[in-house]
Length: 103
Image 1 (cartoon, one colour):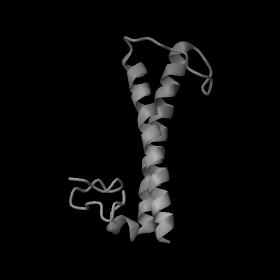
Image 2 (image 1 turned 180 degrees about the vertical axis):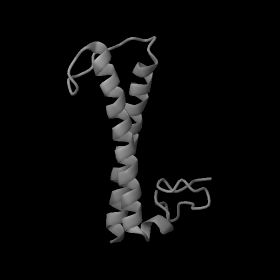
Image 3 (image 1 turned 90 degrees about the vertical axis):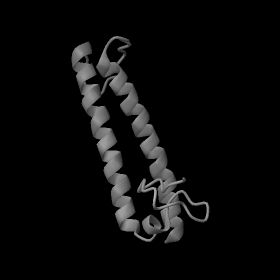
């Protein structure tokens, strides 16, 4: 069953082919807050993992981490967090387009 990409509530099915359910579209401020909160959480998680990798590699935070240690769980967690952030930002962009169109 398709669900709303913002609320993830299976009861809140997508209507009219929209990615965002009517409930989320009718509460733009709450939806924008939800998107912002998810983005900040994803960014914070990635930053935390990048900091760990930077310390381990002995480089300054903010410099590119060139670690490719395949036996390090932080390496995989960092890749997963980067992918999650990318997905979250993509979702945020699409959802904001829908919400802005409703305004």
